[in-house]
Length: 222
Length: 341
Image (cartoon, rainbow over all chains, first blue to last red):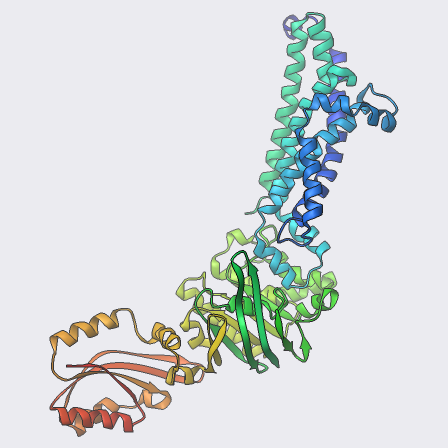
């Protein structure tokens, strides 16, 4: 039945490409999570009225974040080619896509982390200060736990955007389902392959959203 | 135990400097419940926040147990803060932690080992009466229960001083009384010094030993609570006292009666301490040929004794009315003629 609907799909290859997409998304997501939280915390802490209030540093981080958030992803890949070459040693394949994926998405996620941190009741931070808490204690025991639902829903949204980015990266040689849909599907005029790759991407997106929603709901005790 | 000297806080705002607290001086004894009352914007919030360094004064010093809080920073300030508990109007609990987790938080900050922490948390839960709610999250608690968690949390590190920042202002009257009773109970059991700020005279009346009245950054009056009730000097103090002694409808009633009985006089009597419990009105009408009509009355209990107010209408011939007022004055009753026709 499925074979008649998608006559040109090579199952083994489709599976291989799915794994590639998941690999690129997964590895970059770990980095984005770490970098995004650090940048988000810095943006929040250096902003006015907060623990490390510093107009200059805040302006610098903010500018960097805004610049990388504004550059269209396709252009960012091209711009990063020299950097990628030095870092990864090649500009083709999954590894080569990672720097662009991470640099393109981490600033976006950092802003979402910042928004989440801003939503924390100032009174709670003040209460922790009144108890004699150090800044590191405030970060790890107040700021991060209290903004966890926003941090998780933010990474869910970022992960979904990232699946899309891996597809774009695929078109210019990174592998994955985007590459499969473009090369095997579009270029060879096999519409069923394009459709099937799209279906697989949709399934991945739904699963990510589903998992994100469950976790957010479970940890949100407000 | 606490010595506030010449403390001043000036904020720089866009529209120029704003003096929130203006050269304030007072001392608080160990084990005292000290109230600061004022309307919003009077500077009381800024003042209480200087007790634990959440706000640094522009001028002056504030010593708690011989330690000047105002010029310490960093680690020393953090250690000092552990000896000063604080509770808030909006409780400021961590929603992500259970009752147990919230109470445990200050102990984690102080680096108390886990086994000890658990034992201490159990004791605190018993102290504030939250048995059975240990594993509930703040969102599952009522306002009164949340403030109980706030109190337990503030007491976790055995502080010497407890600061209450409008701690009952977000609670209904019944819950307010329950929380105030708990504070008195803690004050007695632990000998804890409590400093509270409020805009409700009811809170002051119910639990404070002494009160400072604050207006536009200055302390305009400071005295034991009963003395304030007996001899309020400032207009603003009289207004605060009116909150507890004169129910809303009093003025309407009096206006109505002034119209209805153009003869005689309406007087507001105030009774302090033992006098509040004597049958003075009975003696008055037995000894003098006057008619007394009781319009409204109330007795309020303070920490240092009872304070009562009574509105009466006195009828009779003018000389007898004068004699009646003299009689009341002689019997240590404050008399204030509201209006005569």
